[in-house]
Image (cartoon, rainbow, N blue to C red; front, side):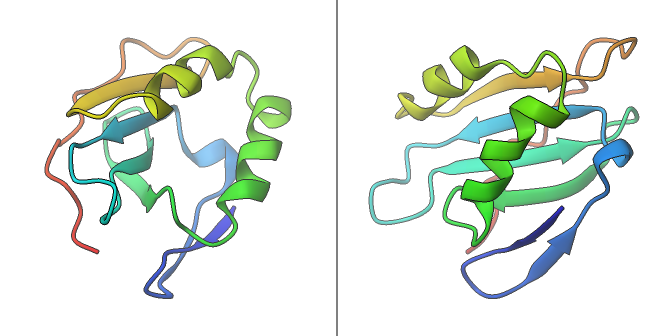
Length: 109
């Protein structure tokens, strides 16, 4: 996965490197990023943290349901409707335990 944030920073994560995909929403919108995709490993380390405005995210969103068995599109829809601070687990690798707690601090743009 190669994604570029709005400031041009590129992040790369292998499909088999992460165990959880969560979405963090904030009340910072609509003029600041308020939705962040977080890819974490089994230990809870953030391998990538991307704003919803990241370049290439559309292609990633199209690929995730195909690549990640059990990807929860309904939870993505719930997250996109959130206007407050919330955390949504949209995918967990089979055999992984409960998702680790995510640092809720909003990433700086």
